[in-house]
Length: 511
Length: 120
Image (tube, rainbow over all chains, first blue to last red; front, side):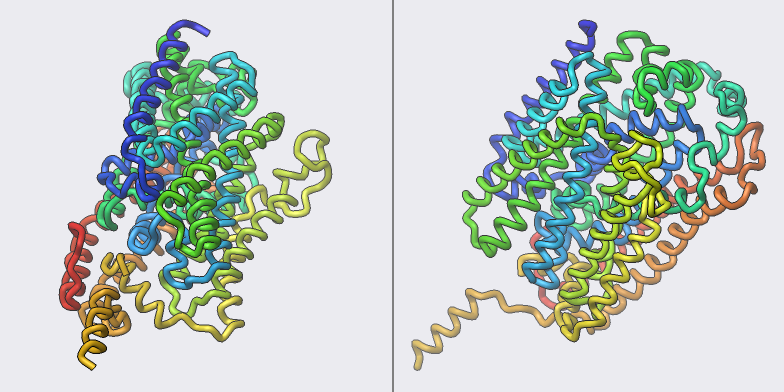
């Protein structure tokens, strides 16, 4: 480890701890803990959403995927961005108008049934745990590579940092860690993109011509089909990407940190620009890495291609830029896992403890204690799982998280806001069908079953052919909700008028 | 008798009077808002999801996007970046439209004597 890396690393740790110290003074109530008191402005929340969303998988993963597979790597960028239109048009404002801290709040504004709340909390917790293990295992491996420290030390380090932010600083600290990370990440990406473009005299056509012969894939590198050869697999992946975002608990939670739907809307607008510009630049990162580092070196450093961006920084800007990019990657990991801990804790402490066990009658002090215990619980549980999962290929965990979000959460959100006949049984059957079908289909898919011994968890021919089951499980989630509603007589049409008025006007929130 | 009536009054003051949501929902101003919202959201959602899903279909089942746009840049990249531009345009248009929705929503709320506590 060189001294610049250590210095930058300590600077980031120092700044984030200072933020946590100041945020802790402002974190005295459950509302301040979960939503920073709802006081974030549009651009602040927009940056925080970007910080929450652009995980190490986005930054290092997509850069690596484009470096290795060319156009096919860029498919992720497209899906992750267009997903924001689903968030903006369908989910963000009603969620802000109807909910308090969690997705379950919003669904329960119509049904007020414990089992519906429990179902929503369960799917949120499942998504958070899978996402968290993926992030922590990825983080451990990455920090091991970047800083040369053992895997378990890296996981513990990230684990302790995220616990400190959330435990003491709640949403205020988490948001500011995300905002700073987003700014650093954009700065780092702009610098590298500029250096890459400068090598091609800022001529995009010249860059593409060069890339045609720069990789072993030849001209295919610039066209679809290098990695995703099965059409239905591609389609299914794209569906999970575009619909999953609108059901991710840690993204949804960010809409409660602003004062009204108008600010929620403007924060999505900010996020769309920031995230979009970032994803355009992933082309330059990927191409640059393939051109100036070379696929051979990228693959030999890390078979998944995760080191493409740091290696590119090394090639273009030497140790200083490499250290900066490594520090940014570290900040990226911290910001995302902190957001995940917070959303997992809210499902446990607010939904299960506060609303189901205490029936909404917990005192402010009890709520705060529960929130903090739950944060530590979620953090410790994920750290233990991550320590045991080191050798696991975690890529499928992220796709599973997106798939559950799209199959279990999105249908129930859409039905709750837009379907008059929808009822309690429908809400429950929609969430359970989506969750269970996503889990089962993934566990019999090529991600888990492979005929090559050691390539996946189970050796054997996959029963279900698609790597990502969204193509089937999302329609199943919608179908489950429809059948559940049709089979039961119970109606919630009067309540629907209330939900519709509240969701669309933003009024009557206190009632 | 008097005490009982007073008590009743106090109770009414303490517990918020629930508005008749079905009445608000049926009001012409709210219906107008929903109509305007639907007129924008339904077609634009179909448009963006349609264009988005068409993309993997085109690149998986056909080679038409592999034709050259300029030099070695194929139409696949143009389509992909087109989806980026589409996202930004739709977001911008929605922000403008939504300002109008906000005004209509506020009118509805005022009509039913709801005082906004925030700054909508």
